[in-house]
Figure (cartoon, rainbow, N blue to C red):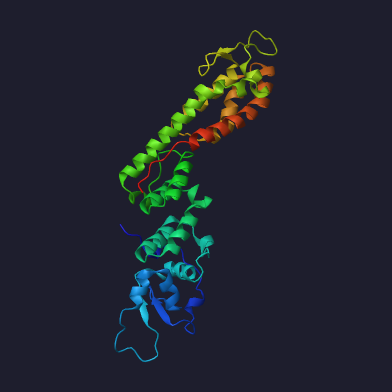
Length: 314
């Protein structure tokens, strides 16, 4: 299934529309003519160099520029031509707002063996507006075009999202096994995060921390009999009920949303504070101390998830 280059977001006409420059014409599928220096585009694309070598129609008037007809739209070539002239130029990035545009450039990059186009697309897909906001579609493109760094960044960003994703055309591009690997990766990240709660919460650095001191105490600092401790299922020791409720809620969410940022989630804080509402002393302490320990916990969650490897086809 090939991309439709007509879906690319239009860009303002550049200097390449000026017939006074260049020695070659690129005529696009929408009949736009780009006036370029053939040797420059040919240097960026061996396929285009071969196209330039093809004989021109015999009836062409003397002195007319040779014309190369291409199947892509002018919107695609308005991105490609500046990249050929200045490979480091991030052409038209601000004008892009959909994955179809990037995909059309990727298809052209593959077709013309144009490395500068592939590098440009890699840069665009790693921008937060794509990698963070549309991670499943970006992951699909990364797998399809073998951009492993793009696929890995996008996979990491899917941890913030529900797996019940909306349909986009890009999801049809890679083989099903690519999404199976993504599911396995998410499952492994969830297991790593849950395992941290089970084991690392007992580390010496936590037990010595001032932040966790109150949360571990078996008795409320107000000594109120109506505020008993409970058994922490992750440590087997007695802990404050608010802390246990926070850990349980975090653990349950990791099964389907293994995102380290959940450790600092406002709703989880509200759950913990709400469970201690019967004791003013506990409510005050948990609201003050839980945000501190959650930051340390999030850092540890980031570390263990970073160690999870996503398997990709090279």
